[in-house]
Amino acid sequence: MHTLITELEKATLRSDVPDFRPGDTLEVHVRVIEGTRSRVQVFKGFVLRRQGSGARETFTVRKVSYSVGVERTFPVHSPVIEKIAVVTRGDVRRAKLYYMRDLRGKAARIREKRVAR
Image (cartoon, rainbow, N blue to C red; front, top):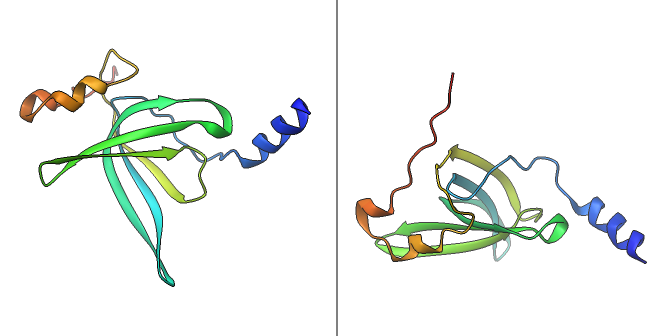
């Protein structure tokens, strides 16, 4: 039974998922169906957390829209996600950035990771 579950999970895994971590800024292109029409909506924000493994892995993206914090949790291997693009790499020391919910203004910025040449 266990091998059957792992085989089904392997079939649902996506291969086009980029490497990203908490603190990175992402653009998540989500397919939204409104009535009979379908369109792609871009949700841009930083990764608050990444949790789980395999087909059940999820990540939460947070953005501030019109001074209201919006968090959205996506399954990594969801067919609703068209594309995940990494905009910037963040330099943080935690795996879960829940403390960012309480920060405002310049304190809520995440340092950009500097790449050594």
